[in-house]
Length: 170
Image 1 (cartoon, one colour):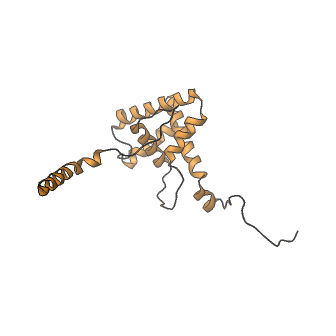
Image 2 (image 1 turned 90 degrees about the horizontal axis):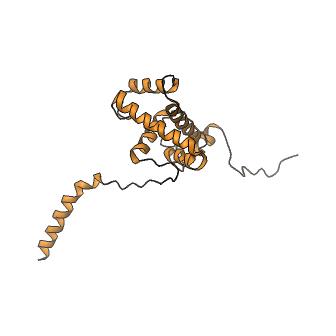
Image 3 (image 1 turned 180 degrees about the vertical axis):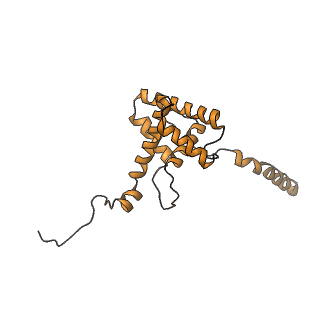
């Protein structure tokens, strides 16, 4: 009898293991003022990673750039700005779907450069789309330039209280 239950358990485990990669076990923080879906969250994260590519594994921050962007928007921006940002995000999704019909990560570098040039010029874009791109780019740079890695290695910044210099002539 024990062999039969063991074989049944093995069959159940082998049948369910291929389904595990499909399960989304990653949890995301929920923001009260800026409701974004997982797809939108990944799109903002891709845009911020492309706009400031950091391939160095030594560069670490206490939080991801996407969490920083959404936290700043949730806590510091007015509801009108959040509405404008979300409508710009929706327009960006439509632009990717209609004009390029691809995911941002799967785009060729030439097309990606064309998209970034179009977004940076902002001549034919709506105000919401320009606001979305400008704020995402600005907050990405702000997050990186305020990180410990950048401040220590590039700005020679010392955190408080700094060094103790004992015997110093006045």
